[in-house]
Image: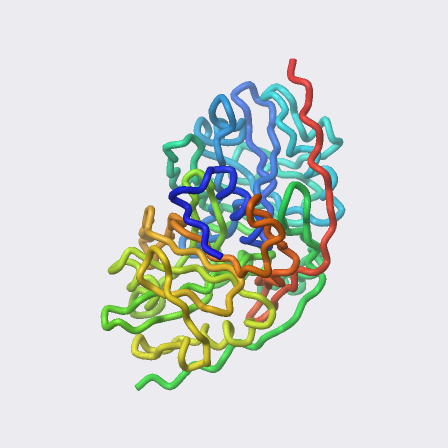
Length: 206
Length: 206
């Protein structure tokens, strides 16, 4: 069944993309307001896209009336922290997805504790098992508003009990218990049903 | 535990990013060679990042000696097809991740059937439940080689039996049976352990 995106309404394109490109990792992004407060919001148009330099990519659509608070703060400050979301934080993460005004500090409203970052101004979410401090690498503005944010990771925090072998940078990924985003208004995925496929051997090149 | 990315070796940064930013969706990318053949390779530094315009983002690291075949073909032709990977295609997808020479057609070698695309030249993988025909929207070149590819989706194919309600663009996402990428050399995830969280109500804005 073919869907021609040139003639499809925007809402249809959005529905098709959200319900097929899965599972999506979740970035719970903390930014600093000009007034000094903090903002937190989740994004699932997100992934790591390079390790040299270490880059994350986050799509931040416009909302009616312009940039979301997160993007406005990133444009102004050039900094943000991406916190990853374990299953026990899922309810709090979901609550912060509502469109609060810029004056609402989602973190304190939902009882979340922050910890200072090492290299950037916005704090991290203390209970998140992984947090990445980021600086803007590139902003790709979209004609319809919003932007695709490429962020350079300058530091990463991993909860100590999640490290298998810190000296060799081995993380116990299943233990992180992260969730992913699936389809529709509210489907999520636990990272439990794992399987292994060994990398294929390098082929002989002639 | 803090990892300062300014002082960490590249391999350590790569290991930390691969083992924490999960679950990652998988793009099985088909491109056309200058000689007319096809190339297929999987990428998990991938996601949808916008719906207006409809954009996919794929990070394509350099390999020793320059661009991977996929990126070289995209630079030359400006086109590619992203096929999504269901569990029954996982073994074939994994086989195509080996670094074959540009003269090897991974699709025919591993018994995969292609179907013509509607709006771009490279074909799609016929057995893939979802395929997205893409044109380059922006290439962000990286100093270390490779690029972050932003591709505009011009058409999407969804297998007919995967549509719940074609007129309303409803896809049966769990039925797609897609897999995601996890940590290490070979950990993958089935999209089976789902849960629902309703979107929070819109807050009163004062």
